[in-house]
Amino acid sequence: MRVVDIIQNKRDGRELNEKEISFLLDNYQENKVPDYQMSAFLMSVYFNGMTKNELKIFTEKMVNSGDVIKFQGIDKFLIDKHSTGGVGDKTTIALAGLFAALDIGTAKLSGRGLGHTGGTIDKFEAIPGFSFPQTKEELIKMVNTTGTGIMGASENVVPLDKKIYALRDVTATVQSIHLIASSIMSKKLAVYADGLILDVKVGSGAFMKNLDEARKLSNAMLDIGDSFNRKVVTILTNMDEPLGFAVGNANEIIEAIETLKGRGPKDFTDLIETIVGMALKLKGDVDSLEEGIKKVHKVIKNGEALKYLKEFISYSGGNGELVDDYSLLPTAKFELRLFSKTSGWVKEINAEEIGKAGMILGAGRATKIDIIDYAVGINLNKKVGDKVEVGELLAIIHYNNDKNLKTSEKMIENSYSYSQTKTIPKNVILEINSVNI
Ligand code: URA
Image (cartoon, rainbow, N blue to C red):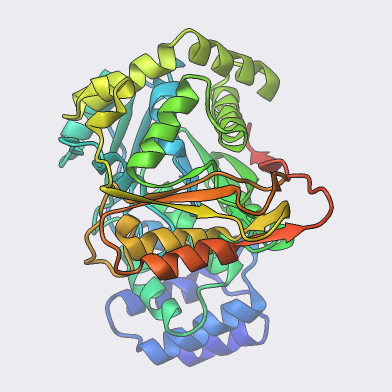
């Protein structure tokens, strides 16, 4: 078998078989296929896509390129909620309380943030003293005690994805729907969960800029989930503006806590209600999303969700009292209030720009080695659909170092676009699809 023939088959639109895909990927992993041939193959996939069967084989090879983890000794129904990366996405923090209150478990590996989107691990680490488990055994104990177990992503889970992703990054092939789908799904399938919930972000701050692309990604991930006989839900959600008002780390923890107190922003509240409602449906506790959402309302109202989040924080070395005393979180020394120079109705807030505006002040990482300042963040005061007058408060920047302050301020201002007629915010939930439930 020759790699050049495999590339040619893919280039000419012929379906590859298991032998061809295995030959290519095994040899690439062992450095026997050079990057230039793999690049040509990836570009052919970019243009021609993969069939459902090719996707299955490709993803299976990715999964088996490293450790496949099944946590033993967890007696909970395990849900892995994954987001394709948004701005202001503090979902996992709120889910730690909600899932536990509703007897749903989570055992997952999570990433750190890079670029304009923040990482879940970073957000939790904004809590002084908070530490993640270092071993599988610690993680299992954590899930059995608190319902939630999260640890940093291991180097040896889907190592082939790291190698291929690095190549995609420099060959303009990151944006291939099928390569994204297999990259995400391989990492999800390598760590066992009873059900997967995939939040596919759509809009200015997301990988998928429009609904059509997001649907294609969602379908590809559902196809892969189906091939592996997994229960999978995809939720397409709006990212034409950041999620909620807070973008940063400590401030996002506060917003997640406020949401568990029933005082959260509408978009974020709708999102977590839907995710947890669908999780209950996946688990078989309810027949409909509406029934699931009622259960969510109950554990927010009776304080159970907050109580479990407090326990989770304490278990992880943080001070659980912070759920009622936000001064226990890092606070920035300075704040800058941004006032609007325009009037009108907010039409869109470019989420990527807001994410970057926070990142250049220290709320995120431009490179892997950057150190995060957890106290830094942006709190928006106006969202899509709001009426704004000249001189009204648009946003507050919390910062410790004014090095990039002027640029950040400009970026926030420019990220707002206005209409002179009333605008209606999009529902955060755009579409829900599933397989095997
Ligand atoms: N996220 C991933 O994990 N992989 C991709 O290819 C794109 C986004």
